[in-house]
Image (tube, rainbow, N blue to C red; front, side, top):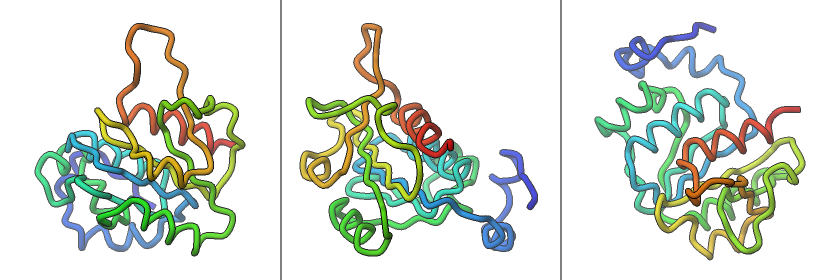
Length: 177
């Protein structure tokens, strides 16, 4: 398979990437974005999704969808090769995935009174990783549907990491056997 740099990905039309997209072996990982506000974060999460070769990205709620110039720019065009779909409600996506993916574990990346360190969660797939709004986080309704709420320890003054950084840390940890 051909590896493309950012310039090539940005400027290659989706039709020219169709063959590469079909050849790719995808991991049993689903990335669910709930009400992500910043289009640059959405683009960065598409880049992460491509790096992980996820099955699908779900853009839920108020999350902006491609085509969008800022998503295009931040994703380096990876939204053209990562399978994605929009769903109005995260809970519907979780229900569908649990019904259709045997052994799926759902993991919210969030700070909560019931969260545990991401290190305490067993590695392996299939997994659905949920990230939430940069200010409000993941909705209580979605958190109630998750098997685990994974938290990244913070030792400084800042309470949290950027949503892309958080998703990258947890996803690479859980996927590494």
